[in-house]
Image (cartoon, one colour):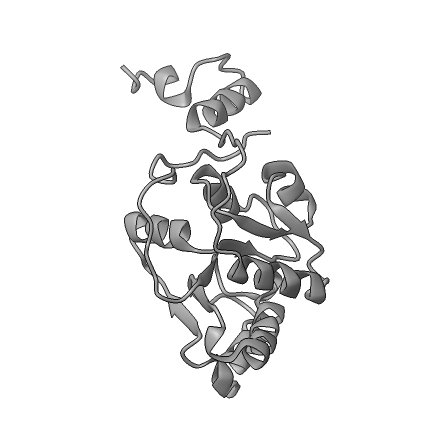
Length: 203
């Protein structure tokens, strides 16, 4: 399978230093990302933890069928000042934000190649992800939880919030673009050469 490569910026390095613990989700805000359940959990956290509630940062543009997410954000006063949205971040800003999070969250019910989840692993950021086939294949060292297990997600987020001890990241070899192009080249009968080299553009 020709997995997409990971840009070199997504590697261990400097991180955002925030006064309040935070978690981050990166991706289009749409139904299959399971964000409505995530926001329901954050309302529960706020009820339990009050001022100690961690922040949730949603990085991405709005996609299709996002009414449930909008309803949570607009009708839940206890999420004001706790849930933040951002888009159009530079790679540098996004990388530092992901590195500083208690965990990157990937609760999707359905995914293809979940690039942000793989990028999180490439930079050594903790990842809590849904237990679905793409995550089992691509990010096996993540903490995998059934996307419908709300209590399991709540417990994992709560534990990550309260655990300030840094844990060494599991070894991870991110997919590389060279490997991607080698697979593609083999599939179209170009042997081991890259498409660029085959057209005389790699010299």
